[in-house]
Length: 100
Image (cartoon, rainbow, N blue to C red; front, side, top):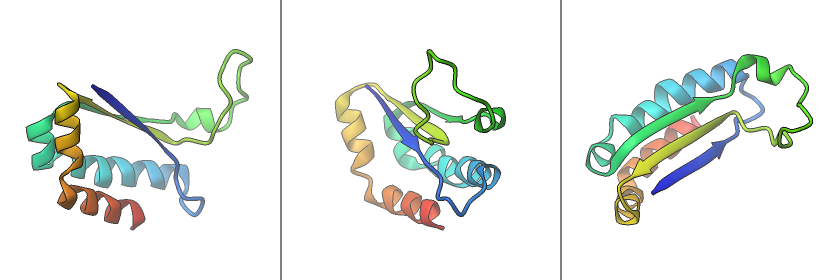
C-alpha cells in the first residue's frame, strides 16, 4: 500500500527553512521511529526544487497548489499502514515538530 501526503509550509517559513526543518526534524523522526522499523517497507521525502518556486508552469503541468513536499510511505499491506498510523506517540512527536 502506498500512502502519500502533500505538504504545505506555513507562510511564515521560507522554502529553505521549511525544507531543512521537514527533512532534518519531521522526516528524521518518522524514519528513525520504532513504528517505521516495524511497519514501513520504504519511506521517501520529495522536496520541491528551489527553481520550481520561480518558474512558470508548463501548459501540460497540473496547476500549482502550493505544495512544498510530498511525504511518501510504502507498506506491505493496508494492515501495516493502519498499525503505523495507530502509533499515537509517533503521531504526537511528528505533530509537535510540524508545529514547532
